[in-house]
Amino acid sequence: MDLLNHLRLFVRVAETGSFSATARQNGVTQPTVSKQIAQLEDHLQVRLFGRSAAGLRLTDAGQTLYERSKMLVEQLDSLQTDIATRIEAPSGTLRVSCPVAFGQSYLAPMLLELAKTHERLTVDLLLNDRWLDVMEEGIDVAVRFGPLPDSRLVARRIGLSPQICLASPAYLRARGEPRTPQELSAHRCIVNNLLSPHGHWRFAGPAGELRVQVTGNFRANNLQAIRHAVLAGNGIAVGPLWIYFEDIAKGRVRRILSGFEPAPLAIHALRMPGAQQSAKVRALVEALAAKLAGLPAFNIPDRASAGPRPRPRSTRR
Image 1 (cartoon, rainbow, N blue to C red):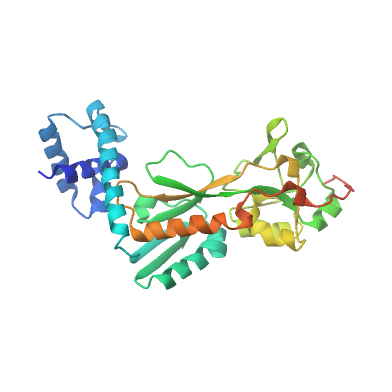
Image 2: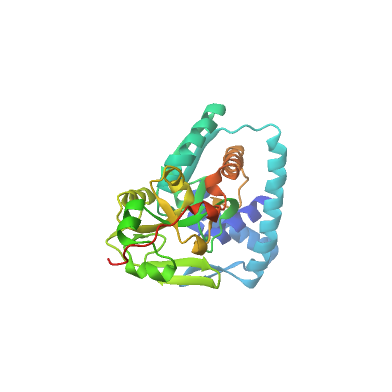
C-alpha cells in the first residue's frame, strides 16, 4: 500500500466531507476512494469516518490522523514546490475568480501581462460579485474581499482595501453634509446588497465602533452600479477607495465622515487545500500582492485629503 498517497486521499475526503466529491476532484470513481479509505483503516486498525445525517464525520482517531496527516502533506507539498520552483514555469490553464469591478479595473490587465510573459499559460477569468464554490468550479485562485467564512481553503492575505464614505458635490450642496454617522438617517444612502443586505453600516469612531441603519431609494449588488448612482447625485455610499480613487482626484466625488471611516477589508487569494501550489498559482499570487502593495488606492488613505467641508444647507430628504 502506498501509505503517503492513501493519507493524501484521506485528507481530501476529510476536507470535502464526501467520497463522491473527492472522487470527482481526483478523476477516479467513488468506489475507488471508498476502497482506499477502507485499506487505510485496515492498515491502521482504526475507524476514521462515521456517518451522520449531515454526511461523513471524522471519528476521534480520524481527527487526530487528519491534523497530523495534513501537516505532513503540506510540508511535503512545500518541499516539492521549493524544488520545482527552480525548473517549473507557469503553464496550463489558470482559472481565476474575483469581483466584477476589481477584475475589470485591476486583475484583467495584470492577467493579460502574465499570459503575455508566459506563453504556455492560458487564463480563464470568472467575474462574479457572488462567491463561487472554488472546489465545485475547479478554480485555481479566488480573490475575495472582507471576512472569510469558516473554510477549508488555503488563504493568503495579499492586500488591504480601505473603505470610505462619500457623495457627489451636487448631492452635498443640495442635502448638506453629515458630520456624524448618526446623521445619515436624514440622508439618502446607496446600499450594497451583498455587503450590507440589511442596510447596516459600521464606522470606527473615536469612541469605538458605531453601527447605523441607513435607507435610500437605490440598492445594487455591483460596485460600478453604486458608483454610477453616487456620480449621478443619488445619495451617499460606503465603498472601496480604489473604485473612487480617480473620481476623488478629479473632484467628481468627495469623501465625508473622514473621522469615522469604516474598517478596511482584507484582500485574500484562496486556493484549494492539499494540493501542491503550482507555478501558475504562485506567479499570480506573488504578482498581485506586489501590484497592490505599490498602489495608493490600496493603502490606508490620509484623512486630511478629504478636503474642505462646506457648511450644510439642509438635511431634509
